[in-house]
Image (cartoon, rainbow, N blue to C red; front, top):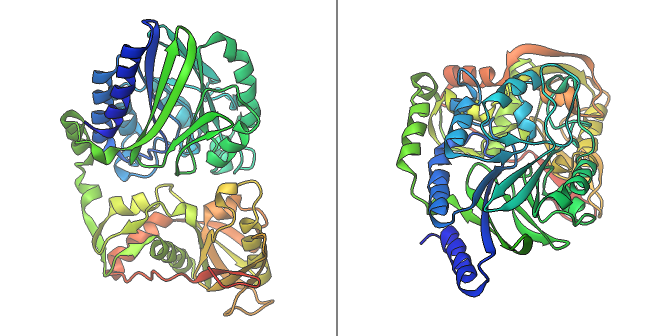
Length: 478
């Protein structure tokens, strides 16, 4: 039997044999950051169906970022709807919001909430607009007489003051501190439920920070940072399944009467399950798009994430006739594109946001400040202390022993000179410490520029070599 259900069945058997009749088992299956990867949804369906066949009381929960990342979902007549239809059919019970739920704007999300046949909770979004309903901060689900409270929160760290994304997507909304909101809801809800669960789209780093000073929750189901986490923080289980439906989280709750006596967690690979035929057929229908599947060009060699980032930096520079191009790693949404034919679906998967090209003029000193401030970012920790800005020009980022960026060396740029610079409009709109002259956003979408290059210049020859590196004072590079 599969790992997940061997785990559940053994625990259920122990309960049956060794415990009083009033002892109960409830299983919570959890996902996060699915990003519309519906090609794996049939495996999730198989895992959920097997669990429901094994245990009578099951809850299916999601910690946010359900769409953006698959052209067959994002380019549907109603973007995101194929994903929601599958979730509704499988019977999700509860979810919170991620930052990518807002990618099409708060008014669009406000309408989409009506299509979600599961509770959606978020305690730290405050609406002052008629196009977005004020959301419930929590909900209580009952399974086998057990009352389980679910509180939801979403990051506000990257905006700053709102989730990652353009300010226009959040017009009319406020996002108070998610940790304070979670603590407040715990105080309100703790005595009303047998089990209290936090659905958090703050990221595991912020989740650890929260749990280090709050012990009111029995379980924290995490999202946003795309990592696999199965640990205890201050005695509270913290679980995150990675991303893109590669895994499912399994939490087994054991209760004696209304007293929680045990919590067991595990992250289980979905590759262990054969796809459920019904859902496999539904997904095949969604993927049957001749327009999105048709090749538009080709790659002479495979491109890894570095090669894709280099290509995107070069593409925005070519589009704007710029001398230097920048692209941020977070905007590169595929890890690899194989050698051979490339479809428009692949390009829209690589750049699913409808991002535009921005053009401006900058000196090396202004570029240096932008790069240093981003590396040292104390607000958006998810994007700090890494090479976030990929450039067409090489540079060395100098850091000290505490990993603080001190300087950037540009071997091919002349200090004091104004260069024509291009980047995507996400950097242009959102990065702090960005100074420039003559800045503007062009009509050209990045995905459209990539498609044009594929049509006109194939086969493309990707450059997978890193042009940027970190140099630590007194040590080597990385």
